[in-house]
Length: 85
Image (tube, rainbow, N blue to C red; front, side):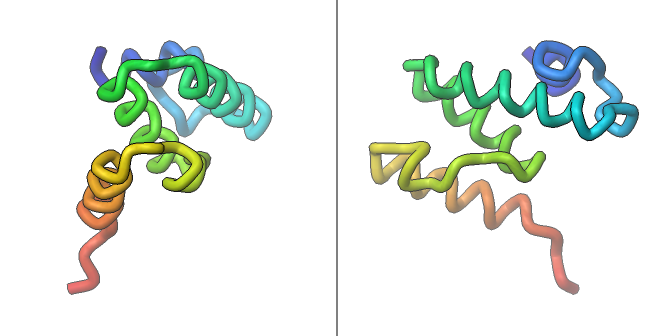
């Protein structure tokens, strides 16, 4: 699935700017539920990354039991930060 597909799946639209606060909260909750149920490491990481970008991701120590997954998430967070140059 691509990014737009993920947005449609959880929020019902690919245009997240059109969501009400309640719509955003409902989609975030759907993501949290799926994140908690998903066993596939790659899928969990992708869900966590999307949640991180939306500001609703769980803390790394809660989200990932494997230290390598936490390190990958930290790397993602660094790459996703805007340049200060």
